[in-house]
Each structure stands twice: as C-alpha cells, then as structure tokens.
Length: 264
Ligand SMILES: NC(=O)c1ccc[n+]([C@@H]2O[C@H](COP(=O)([O-])OP(=O)(O)OC[C@H]3O[C@@H](n4cnc5c(N)ncnc54)[C@H](OP(=O)(O)O)[C@@H]3O)[C@@H](O)[C@H]2O)c1
Image 1 (tube, protein in one colour):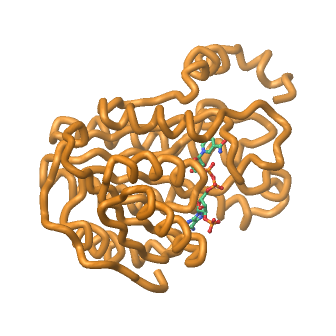
Image 2: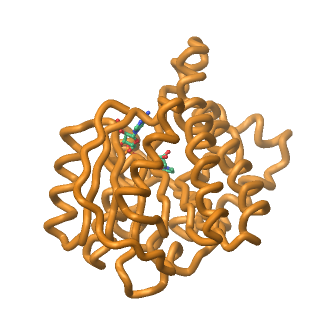
C-alpha cells in the first residue's frame, strides 16, 4: 500500500444490504471494468464507498465519476493488493473510514498469459498469487470482521473458468478454482454467523481483461446490474450471464476421455 487518501467518514450505521439506507461498500480492485460498472449502480443509489486500486490516476478518475453519479461518500486508497503484509492496515483503515461495512466486493485479478506461464513458473505463480493467495489474505480478515458483527456480505469475483481446467487457460482457471473452493468452505463456516459469502462466476465479459479475445462477451453493464441484484438477495453463487449455469453443468460432466482430446 503506497498511499491512503481518504475523506471524512459519515456517521456509523450498519445496514442490511436490502435497506434503503446508504450501503457502506468496500471495493477491492475498484478500477476493474466489472467493479466500476457495479459501483456506478451503487453510486446512483447514494451508497458510501471505499475504493482500493493500485493505479492512482485511474482510481482518482473512478472516484470523481462516482461522486458525480450520486455516491454519498467516496474514500480511496492506492494499494497493490499483492502486498499481503499491508492488508490488515489497509482494511482497518477502510472500514474505519466507512465507519462500518455492509458489503465487501473483491474484484481485482489478472488473466496473465497461459503460454508464458507454461514456460515460466514465476509468471504462473504470479497469476495464482494475485487471484488466489492475495484474496485468501483479504478474505481471512474480512470474514473475521464480519463474524464479530454477525453481519455483512462478502461478494467475490471468481470465474466460470474455475469449473474445469482446459489447455488454453488452466493456470488462470486453477487460481479461480482454488478461490471458488475457498469461498465454498468459508460460506459453510460463516453463513450461520449471519455473514453471506457470495461467489460470482462470470462468463466472458467485455472489459479490458478480455479486449484481445475474439469471442462472444457479455455487456459489462448488464453483468453489473445482475451482480447488484444478487448481492441484495444475498445469493450464494451467481452465474452471470445465467446461460453459463447449464453450460458449465455440461462442461463439468463431459467424460475426461473425451474432454482431454478437445481443443478448448
Ligand atoms: N472480464 C471477464 O471476462 C471475466 C470473467 C470472469 C471473471 N472475471 C474476473 O472479474 C474480476 C474483474 O475483472 P475485469 O474483467 O473487470 O478485469 P479488468 O478490467 O482487467 O480489471 C482487473 C483489475 O484488477 C486490478 N488488479 C490486478 N492486480 C492487482 C493488484 N495486485 N493490486 C490491485 N489491483 C490489481 C487491475 O488493476 P490495474 O488496472 O492497475 O491493472 C484492474 O483494475 C477479475 O477477478 C477477473 O478475473 C472477469
């Protein structure tokens, strides 16, 4: 974490995500295309948000835009989320700045390069670190914070990719598979404490992450609207677009003797 730039926080109120009182939302990876689109909806609802991202310039632009769109409070911190040693300090600062937290939204991640990772272990390790290990550190702190208060929604962007490794992206896919399994276990531990752990599994979405891919991609605004509704409903697992629910059911059930021969 390099800098912590904040504004004065509003009064402390812990609210249900469904209530009309301004939600207090912590966004990690706030400059992500999906996160930004989601935050725009929350801003229009008058939410209070604390945004964390590693690119100061992009973060400032997103924060300014959200204020214009109606957010009742926007705090920011510039942080490389790979820096797990700084997570406790960062998260403490964020929830203090918000004077509470109703929703934590984890959106940062990297696609990385599959071909590069096949030759270069350091690159493969980087993908797994950013997408899995760093979130585990964040989630550990956030889960314990929410359990102490018996409240909160922790919503995390995993991926349909994590459902089955395939040759074109199994390094990224395995990082998301690990994340999905971690979230499943965390939910099993803390749902009974009043804390919702939500696993969001998008299919391909039109953001900078997929800009180079010549495939059918979902519209990021539609994806964000679906995510906001699902968080309000405290859904456990969300496939977005919903067509990926049956698609991934089929993908998971293709026999390995066939799957291993497919060019996927
Ligand atoms: N787009 C898709 O098709 C798709 C599908 C399934 C799942 N997802 C997941 O959804 C999430 C958001 O993806 P997106 O499509 O919105 O991608 P994106 O626009 O490329 O955003 C990714 C964000 O993660 C940030 N980030 C990466 N490493 C970081 C680090 N160490 N510290 C802080 N921030 C870091 C990036 O910051 P910089 O801008 O500074 O690099 C960027 O803002 C990711 O977890 C992704 O894996 C995306």
